[in-house]
Length: 130
Image (cartoon, rainbow, N blue to C red):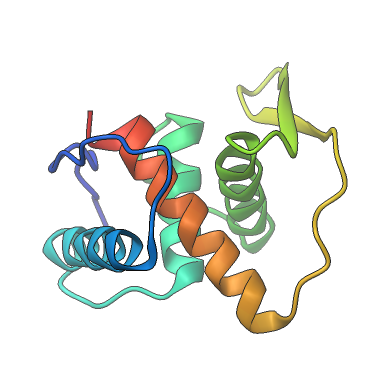
């Protein structure tokens, strides 16, 4: 399956996002995934696609382990905006490697989901919709 680049929409950057701004931006991110895939995505699918984007090698068949690695790449990338991870470099196959530089907050499952969603929105603001 081929996914075109996610460069489809522009969000003006804002430093402090209130709940209404977040919800509006989150819905636009979901809309873009629907436009790309024809289906409403869940968080895992969004992370997988961000991982593919960050790997930069296009869509191809990935092993189960590679799919997990792609999701890890995405999580590290989006959390790097808040200083939780920093890029160490790439391995010989071009896969990025990240290191954790500050402890992640202790959150409930619902808070973790919101935390990831807020960072996904920030990723789209900074990396995709510009």
